[in-house]
Amino acid sequence: MRDSGVRRAFSLNQIRQIDRVRYLAPAAQVENITFDTGSAAISPEQARNLLALGELMTSMIADNPNEVFLIEGHTDAVGDRVMNLTLSDRRAESVARALTEYFGVSPANMVLQGYGEGDLRVATQEAERRNRRVVVRRITPLLQVASNG
Image (cartoon, rainbow, N blue to C red):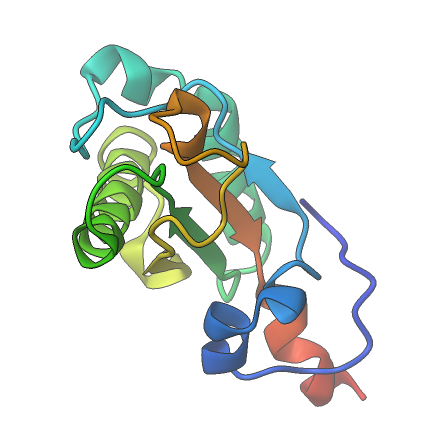
């Protein structure tokens, strides 16, 4: 999650809305957190499973207080698209809240974005737990390149 090798800067809007720009930042799949259908809830046990990610993020923020992480929420393709988009936002919020409450990651260092069913990990229209997930990307290099060049 440390170096993306990007050579130009993008706006936060570009990163959030253009897939090929967002994909320039390596993804950390939050493997141990998946959600029940229609739910954004994570249990305290699942939140504790964020230990390695939480420690990495707090360490990186300690080294550079301007670090920015994109917390992406995703759903499977079951249900209404608009409802899934809202649900994916709530999933990103749940993980961000856990990172703050359990590991002290400042909300100021996180940008939240839901993608609904728009980026399925497993291509299926069926209920698929692996699609109900959160992804974290360190987007600092995508935002800062212009100021370095």
